[in-house]
Figure 1 (cartoon, rainbow, N blue to C red):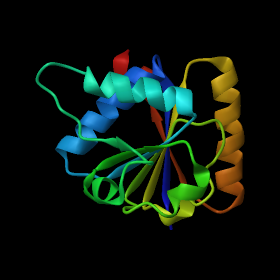
Figure 2 (figure 1 turned 135 degrees about the horizontal axis):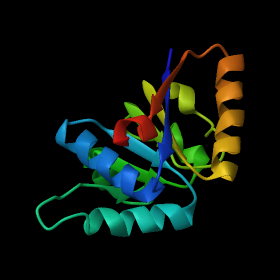
Figure 3 (figure 1 turned 45 degrees about the vertical axis):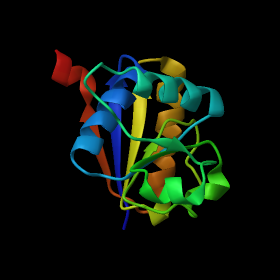
Length: 146
């Protein structure tokens, strides 16, 4: 069964996502990132400018098949394409809803900021996962930085 982990209290979703993806990339993980097109565009730009010494290989889901199959990190705003991606290790959800096909991934990471509206949407996703029988892991990022 898919492991679902919520990373709560991220002060900046984009910054945390970049750091998470850099760490995942260095560890050899394959990650699918789901979110709205505007957020993924910002993430794409941020990954290219993360630091002068870091390169985090990634592409958008509309890249050619040979690029998708070799890219360890794929950014997708299209829910229908998630299950058709070349890898299903980790799904990083930057969206407001649970993406269709999430259960095809080994792990789902839900990233939640300190924004109250974002937290409320995360509570709804938490309840949905729990109602479907998924065991949930909670990581309080605020406690780590304190």
